[in-house]
Length: 213
Image (cartoon, rainbow, N blue to C red):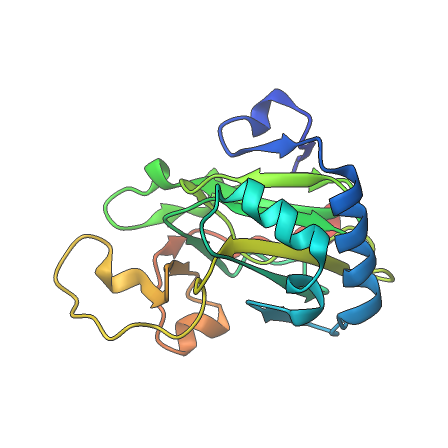
């Protein structure tokens, strides 16, 4: 699988690099390295006090979300597989202590309630680079570039995202994919999430980039 840099023009429909926040990004990556774990698999925390309480986080979050309440959490560990794709009604911002890879697709590539994983593209994000992943971009857990280092990645989202699923009726639209608050999930049939009841809406191979690193 081709792994594009986020500086490549092909990344433009999926997101953008955010610049101008060097001191804030440095403080956040330092806190990620010092205060968050590195699981053998993949771990996720929606809101991390060690990040949320940083003065730099308050300044950065206010700018990124235009004054809306926000949460700074993390997704850390080791991973090379797609497994699922998710989206929110808002952009997500990511920043890593190490280089990491995002597996991405577009919401408008969903056809007849399913997405073919052949549509997925891989993008490498350099350490210390803040990226915005647009609301219309399907994404999930990052992948590592070096198994010895793993990844520690900031996940910045509107407050409450990825917390407990609201009790809502399944009536239409994408209701059947709602998996958590502000989180719609398309699972691959081979994923653990599908086994837990997530809608198996990804067709094709469950991508594994281990051989491409």
